[in-house]
Image (cartoon, rainbow, N blue to C red):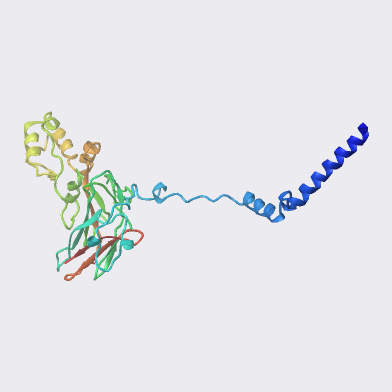
Length: 298
C-alpha cells in the first residue's frame, strides 16, 4: 500500500471517531442557553444593596445606646407588657419619687439614672404617662450663663444624674441644670421649690486685700446671699463696695465656670402641669419609640 492510500485511510478513521463523539454528547453542552445569558445579565446590571447603618452610628441618636443583649428576668416585666414592649433603656432610667400637688403645694416626679458605666442617655422627648395626665420630658439649659440667653438643649443623663420635674412654673421661664452658682438666682427670682443654696463662699485669700470691716461684712453674708445696697460702715470703702457688686450670679459664674465640678448632677424642670394623680397612680415612662422604660405605682 502506497503512502497516499495510508493517508486517506488515517483521515477516514479520524472522521469516524469525531462523528461518534458528536452523536454521544448533547449539543447543549457546547451552547450556552439564552435563558442563562439573560439571568447573568440581570445579576450583573442589578444595583448593589447596602445595609442601613445602625441607629448608634447616627450622629442624631442618643450619645450611647443601651445594650439589648442583657437578659431580662420575666418577673421584672410589668403586668400588661411583654418583652417586646421593653425599651433598650429598660430600668436604666427609673422613677425615684413621685407625688401630686395638694392645694398650694407642688407636685414632683424625679427620674434617676441606674447605670454604673460611662453611658449618656438623651431623655428629651420621652413620655411620662399617668392616670390623670401626661408630660413630655422637655429641653433645658445645660450651662446657664449670666445673660440668660443660653439655648435650651436635650437633657442627657449620665451616671448619678437626677431630673426633677415640678408642677410649678419656672421663675426664669427656663429649665436648667444646676451648677455651683445657681443659688444666686434666687436673690432676684422666686422659685418654687426654692433653689439649693450651695454657692461657693469667698475664700480668705480672695478677700485678704480688703479692709477688715469689709472682710467682716463679707464673712457675715449667708451662702449665696446678696449684699445690702448700702452696707453700714462701708460708705466710703469704694474698693469693698466694688467687690460686693460681684457677689451675685454673674460674679460667681465668672470665677467658677471653669471649675471641674461647676455643673451639678441635677436637672430642674418646671412643667406648670400637675399631671400626677392624687391617689392610685400608675406612672409609665416611655422612650422616643414608645417602648417602656420604667413604671411607678402608689
